[in-house]
Image: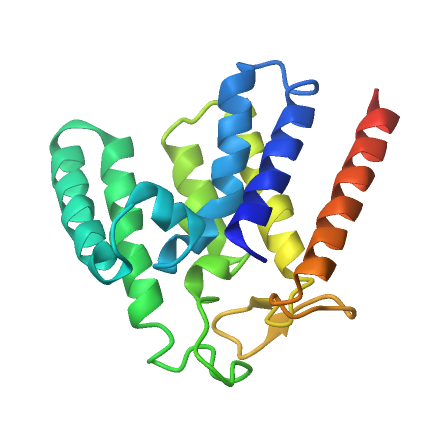
Length: 206
């Protein structure tokens, strides 16, 4: 699923969450949107990378490395959160450039694809959720981020042909009915169905 689609779903879900979570609405929406697009940070052409590093794609990883090292070094001395962001940037480069070449997921991927470590729903607990918890992120915002991560990104990616990798197993999880990401019409239908379902579930909770 395209990054813009994940972001739209994340925005919609974040708005609904503001009526359930009694915290700063802007932060709740932002946390949900970030969660919905951050797994694609290891793919240099993704929406989140274009937003963070709006330069030519051939220079994007170099800039990411420079920023990542800078943030990690500065954060090591001053701020745990900044250090973590720097580490994620650096780790995303490892995930994108090395993990596939080491044949971690070649068992089901016949062609190179960006679904590597950051798209593993099990590893995401160690990469994203647990560190955020350890850093003392407010529970409401952590919930919003986790909803964006697992519902707005991972759940919807299960409808895609590639599904989600289950590292270290050469297995993937996906819905019985799945589609090719090039099929824009089906993707929009899935987004529409998700939004309608979310609204109905939200209404039932009130």
